[in-house]
Image (cartoon, rainbow, N blue to C red):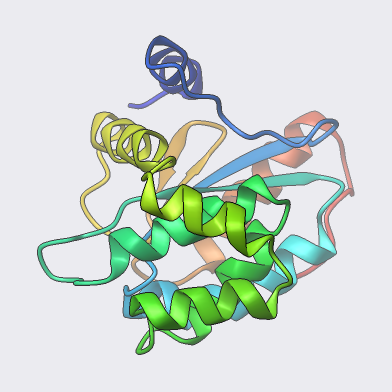
Length: 188
């Protein structure tokens, strides 16, 4: 079994940091790939759930691109991290996941521009591969956690099997939240 504390220690030993919302009752880590069709299929449901429960659940996206099968997944992850550096991760995530068939470099720059990102900074970070160490740390952490495919979810450090649907994820979140604080989650 994987524990989030060990994952955080691994990240810290590599100079990385987990992203956790202050005050959240439950931490969910999603390992994803922007070209993964299943990630795309569940994105809308997760987005709605995230918004309904933002004060209770901290959703943290970690990159786990399958570069062997997904040609553009790694560079899409880089673009997402450039957007994160400018406070626009989830907006970029939405553009990338809803445009999975258009993740070439030109499209990534067009998405960044449409979000109003500082394009000089975006270009510099893409050219210098500024966020590659962070993405590699996500992949390493995912491998340690037993991630083999995307999407994969951890609820407070415990892997959740969602092969039969997201209801298992929502139930795991509800169970953890109930243990800590009753009645705090909206229905999915």
